[in-house]
Image (cartoon, rainbow, N blue to C red):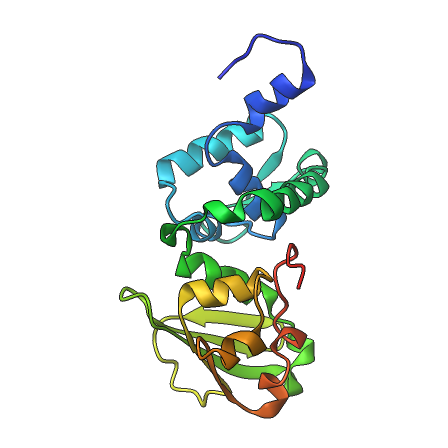
Length: 221
């Protein structure tokens, strides 16, 4: 995609305007470094297209591809040029919160994406003892309705198979309900009061969920 203009916006669009490129950079700036981590945050992208986009980002100096010592595969690390995009992406997200939320459809509420970002939102230092098992049961999806998040200090794992551990907190709701809470469009207390969310567990964890699982950076409530 070439515009044939010396305008910096045009050249920037040539580099960043291909489908998926901005979202790949979003994932890299949020801490993903492995190919499978990037795929998890971009569940609808094909491996071939992801490889193509990573090659393009490497060509333009936005990432560095490094062989993982003693392992198969590579790490993809953002360069200073990519890191300079972070405040721009934050402003883009703020704009999206103001002007695009009304255009969401049911297809936009992806449980895999939600759970990835909830995993990243856990604050283990705010959990008593730094250990907890959290179970999520979603009532509006058949593919993977049950999820577990296991916190053990800085190690936070997510799975869809019962880990056979005592659960400290149970969430029962729709993917949309929890997504909207995390995005700051509603609150845990409001959704519990209206019956859209059932939250069961030790009071130290259910009294103020946002103290140990923060909302999205774009949330305003």
